[in-house]
Length: 298
Image (cartoon, rainbow, N blue to C red; front, side):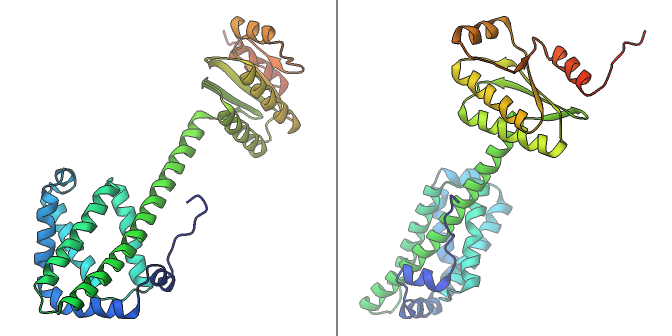
């Protein structure tokens, strides 16, 4: 996740959120009174959730709702054990990706945690604790809720970023489909605009494929490129130069009259770059270069 480290050490987390042993002890003391009411507390929380716009989207199915209620009860029972160890942290780390997969908005999660704090406060008021102890207990509960929230949000964001990165990689691979069409011949049809990032992606994908296949000829078809300006032409030249350094000859096909005129008007020196008007011409040249002759069967 952009080089950041996922917080997972229980001792460091407890220190970071200033959760002392007495905080965990207060939570355990409260658990003895809260456990008998846990089903009611979760029920109260779901009464609040039913009024939220996300309820129908995520909990309209009865089986899904019942499964969520069961997991919620288990979650808070684990919370009230007041034992923040590796198993506890790992259980919270699993929650973030689950929320991310179903698309639960983080603001809904934040609101839900806040509401459960209010539920805890309500049930604390019903206990026979002294007011000072009640206030300290609620403070301890809030600290642990904040720790839980931090872990869950961190893993939620990590899952989302990893998903976006994977999707971007897939899109890059789709937009730069360097294909071996014959032994020793690679083809890349380019469609759309070419900017600096896409040019780098094309170069990286092309050089990797040349290294993998030991190709001798690379055809780059630009008939689908919308605009060829100085920047685009320079990108194309750099790609051909890089392929040549790897011992692979590059041919740019799909050079239309308008593209040829643009390159001439821009005064760009194409040097040793081979160009053809059509992919058919480029392919015929490539086959000859690798010693293949195609004859028409009558």
